[in-house]
Length: 149
Image (cartoon, rainbow, N blue to C red; front, side, top):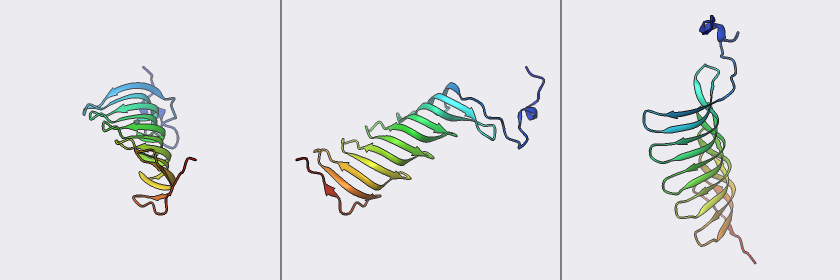
């Protein structure tokens, strides 16, 4: 035990000093499980930060980077339905480049913005046909089919 009290560990701005991440294995009250790195936030709260794997009680699995308790950075999110996203996350959302595989095996590879298909991308249907172009949420006008000659 240290003779210091809690206020002694605060820096001059009232924030906790930056600590190295620690590895944890935590089971949440709802049955979710997290195995990975945690660190203390600027406000002193222990959060998932760094690399880790979160498995929900319903079978959704995220493996990847975390920042202050949010999926943030590169990762993979798998659903029990076999839907899967591999790519960049920001604030718990698909954001950046990635690949979303639908339960039927069709897939979209390209840009995402706040969980929406947004920008250049390619959609591959279950027959292997590839449609390329600009995607804007549910709209994708003027797509061109890729021909393999």
